[in-house]
Length: 274
Image 1 (cartoon, rainbow, N blue to C red):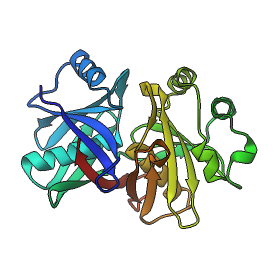
Image 2: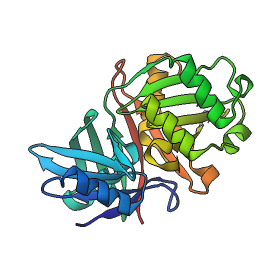
Image 3: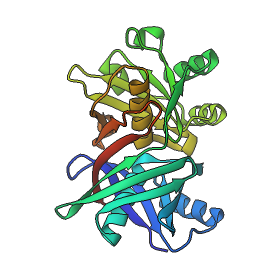
Image 4: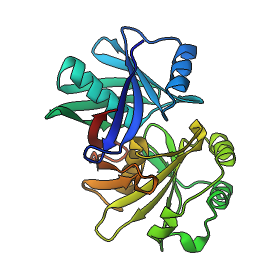
């Protein structure tokens, strides 16, 4: 079985989040997909097969299936573009309908996903307290006027907005404890962000629920964040997200929310072959 290895949301010719991509006439059974994803070892591997005018897609992390994955969708878009030509591809995912559009960029590819619908709510106090304890955060570490939010764009993410870029750079936590907390709470990642004066969002996304310490680029979390901002009237327009720099794996994501309340979010980036 051919597994393509691509890095999505690369910053030029470096960085990006590695994803496995498998395109076939039919999807393998779940046990086979899980085995392949574990062997590949990336935070996610996307498996895609045609179904009429759509593509059925499933995503597997090393330790389980996730309903939707942004960076693997963008990697899949580039792979579909290389195989079938530039254009848009409608997707059926476990989280609902999505789409990806691919276009050539010289010898490389750019791709833009459109996420499933978004929503957000206020997490319960116990989840907030346990998550802050996991990262050693206090109330003073949070940006003034901000509140933790549970946001969804195909998968659930708990978002903390920090007051200091150094606090983001110093992030650390216990992987086993983080995995237990995230799985119990139904979270795919916990997203820590810092908004710089120039408007660029700096982000770190622990993915302990999938057995991964941290993702260098997280398209689903970017969509969840920007969908929340649109629906809460916080910010709209094209938003640049810098992620992975504190890991030494620089990545760039560009997210734009569709105008309707609760609609999906477009997240674009460059894809490079590993």
